[in-house]
Length: 203
Ligand code: SF4
Ligand code: SF4
Image (tube, rainbow, N blue to C red; front, side, top):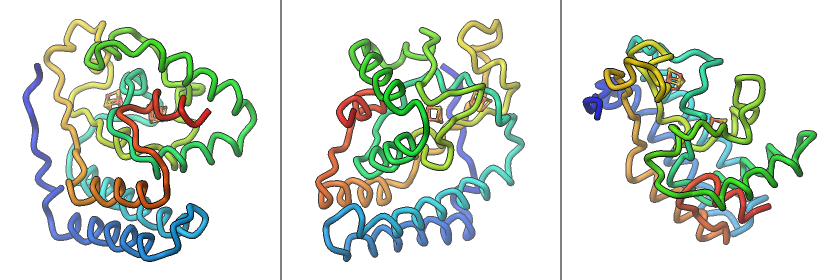
């Protein structure tokens, strides 16, 4: 196993400011009537704050991640809240090919097996198109956790130096995970163990 790396910028005052903004937006959503349509704007605001948090952390570390490198999109992201699944579903439904994308999630959900071996199986996420996430703005928090300090190609399980890779994992603070789950419960949006099974249920 590669070593666990702590990203010091994740505890900085600026990081805290972005995370607090996300929490406030989710708390605002919790005060609205329990309907997705009523909560949507606050949820978007929450994810904008999370994006700013990630940008801050990345700006302070020499990450080698590139827009078009995709090894981590051959994974099945774990722990996805109902709110995130709903956001992603809306993004998919707004574009051509939505039916086949949802069907592909349903197929993958029947092939789950051991989550730790998923990437080695080399099966791309149904949202990976032309080497990019086609739903980048709506991708769940779990997809935003992967980073690399070593060359991108080392992230591929087949690479000879895969065992030496340095992949910091940016876990979201527990209070935010909890807020996303509480909001999802309030809106009647079921949380999922992983992306494939969660999207399959919506399809
Ligand atoms: S974690 Fe690895 S595969 Fe994913 S974007 Fe970064 S370098 Fe690419
Ligand atoms: S949703 Fe997007 S970022 Fe997440 S695994 Fe799929 S393609 Fe990658």
